[in-house]
Image (cartoon, rainbow, N blue to C red; front, side, top):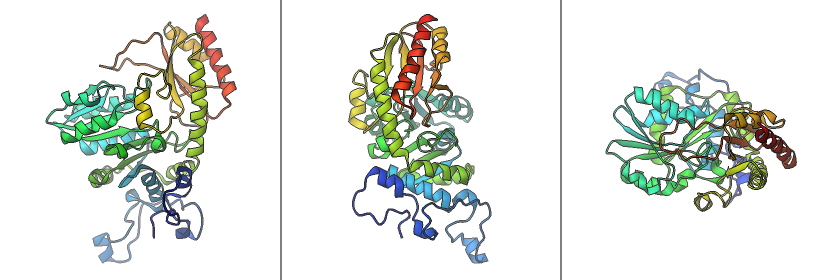
Amino acid sequence: MAKDGSEHFSGGIGINTRLAHSGNNPHDYFGFVNPPVVHASTVLFRDAASMAARSQKYTYGTRGTPTTDALAHAIDALEGSAGTILVPSGLAAVTVPLLAFVSAGDHLLIVDTVYHPTRNFADTMLKRLGVEVEYYAPDVGAGIAALIKPNTKVVFTESPASNTFEVQDIPAIVKVAHAAGAIVMMDNTWATPLYFRPLDHGVDISIHAATKYPAGHSDVLLGTVSANDSCWKHLYESFCTLGCCAGPDDVYQVLRGLRTMGVRLEHHQRSTLAIASWLEGQKGVARVLHPALPSHPDHDLWKRDFSGSSGIFSIVLAGGGQKQQHAFLDALRIFGLGYSWGGYESLAVPVWLGDRVVAKAPYEGPLIRLQIGLEDVDDLKADILRGLTAAAAA
């Protein structure tokens, strides 16, 4: 019996078919199309011998249930991974593999444009534990060889970059890192495995905030970490050691959201490209930071490696400072002011780049990050114009 419901398909199947059917076989559960939501801590053994040998599929709630297996198997089908762990948040999806693969005295390279909570974890807990943390520019590519040390154990990538959306040359970085015996992790939340499959490009561990597009409705927190064959056993053992498992109701909600992620992402992509292209011609906008636009300096790299784009990007206002930035945000009526993204609703946040140490390129004005939701494009354009008008008057 296959581990999911896709065994009745022959040959290659489309991504939306895979999203609809991967993860569990309904006939394992009397034909019900969704798996049961198993709330579990204790699991009973048939006898003392099986208990001593742990010779049954499930042994305790922290080590997996039919609910967590359904989502993990679905993610494996999307990622092409040997295994996936589910953790309570996107940030936990960053911290668990880092704790698993770096030790005191190790050197860790992290892209300087990384998600700020990742940087905060590295600069506080990892440094306190004796890990040497160093940041590199997102355009380093094969030049990362100059930063590799004998004790470099992990290169942590994120592409496109948080807030400014630079695209990294992941295959070039992987080649250098692997030659030095280091593993490569990638936060791939922006693209999801629908538009970029990190393991196909040599990455060892793929990280996602499933809070975003897989969940899709701004009402659940979850993270996934998927590993290749060489890293899976160590990742899973570390995960079990930490006991950092996700709750079954959250897992079920993400699995339900996963079924429609393909059609939602298509809508996000179409609306976002329409708005981003339109913004390039608007007065008061100095730059649009979206790698799928031909104007983006990393567009060719994005086009080479990615098969699509999602719903988040940034704009640079044409001059001004925090006053203009806040005026833009406060004038919005449809866009909400809130963190996270990937949900059905459009969001806007002010961008702060004061934590960077090497990627300090000057910008013409303040930055604003936009998450384009599922609303009508014309309504969102009108709302953005309200913001631009307010910024110009501030």
